[in-house]
Length: 431
Image 1 (cartoon, rainbow, N blue to C red):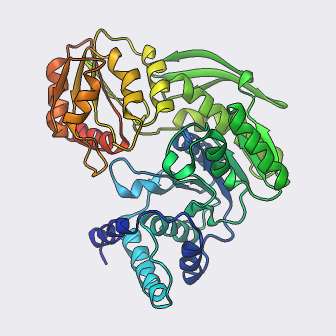
Image 2: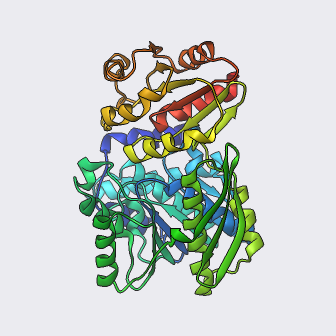
Image 3: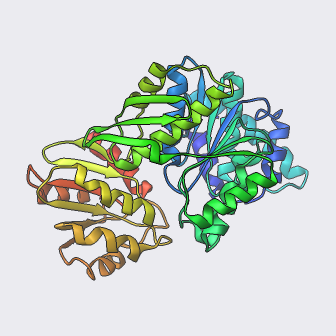
């Protein structure tokens, strides 16, 4: 099996949908020799901020000299991004070789009457095998969907469970209330383990507290009141932070936006808690270097200037609100918005926040069957802004945005990670 055949095999399993139960992946991992057992995990769930927080934690640990596996989803430009060690993606040949082994084990499972693993279960298993065989010191493990029944939650132990902001998303799967969604996210909490949570809305934090009590877990709510932001600009931010006996002044991040300061504070708190417990050995300078060196694609990412060309992966209400709040970090005259939104999202609510800010809007279509047709999206947008242009081809949408923009304008593409991945790739290749 070569790399292309491996990807084809993995993505062909999309027809098996999602499987919110753990018995299938348990059996697959058992046949693979239980590679997930014995690794040291920092497990991360939440609605927004998971990827950035995971990347901050992984980069700080890397700066401390550790070998760190990072598992995230989805990918933006290339599948291998989902599974990396110290910032280097899994090599094509290793991905193909491990996928072949997994395919052989799945054939055994099917003969024994087990359900076929889903795409995400296969990808998660590839990650576990790779990290085990590469003998990593830590795995920073991002949940795919929810937490309680997510394939990553097959792990039985974790050094720490981290819960980022919780808000409404995937309500068809996770539930229609914050309490139900929080219950699914809190499912990653392990018995007598360390738990770190972002300060949540009351309904969500009460659920987390209850689960921690039931599992005798030690809960810390990140003290965001101890964050003192010194500066925010279009290149990142600087902040002071103190936690327990630790005082860190003028911490610098390269990710843009106020929310990234708070994601960084959450990540720093995770590291400091692990340090307090003697679970990691890291000093202040390594923490500083880790924060400053963290990069995370498509989070208010500037691809070029004059005109400013920015992409952002916001794809739910909380993400859009955060994006809108942080647009003021940029200096620009007019806003040229490029967008495509998936039809299973709260489209109108997202458009209500975005459309009135734009001077011109270019509507395109993400390369995924769940996309909203451009003409249908235009009808929604026209309720709030009639300066619209439809370019279904993403490359032509980028060209149109550039044609509409002057040198001191801001071009912003947002609405779906599937869109943003293609925009980033096309922009890199062509502009």
